[in-house]
Length: 217
Image (cartoon, rainbow, N blue to C red):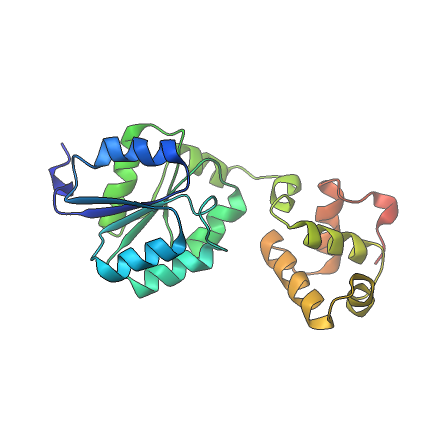
């Protein structure tokens, strides 16, 4: 059925043993070569040594800092297709991956056929989202889901902004530089897709991070 895989080399970049073993049992008999790696350093080393056709990765569990690292891999190794296979994903994470040029995404709970569809599309340079991923993409998600991707430090800064402190005052309170707080602020706005403090704080209220009575502009 999948004779078109007999000339491809596949890397699984995942830290979950059962995922690696499961994919190995499914794909290894079909492919020319099959490898597993558990670190970005190991992945980079293999890509430099071998001409790989496909990377399947759970970029959230793997030691990637962000979707932009996958974008850099795609630019560095343009002939290597990338499929993201993860436990769960948010609307915002799908958007970040899409913006980084990663457009083949499915969940570990999806059926085997979905895996093959995603691989086939990736190898042809086409987009493929599994049904579950499409459902996530098409549903309008609430603020609580989006805000859950903020770090503890970023959530603290949202609350300090809500209390009426300026960026300079937040920097003093947190013993950080003005530049560091500005960087956090930009990252918060980017992650939540907001463009102003009032919009940010409405998100925070909806997500339950702050009460209406804390809301100061």
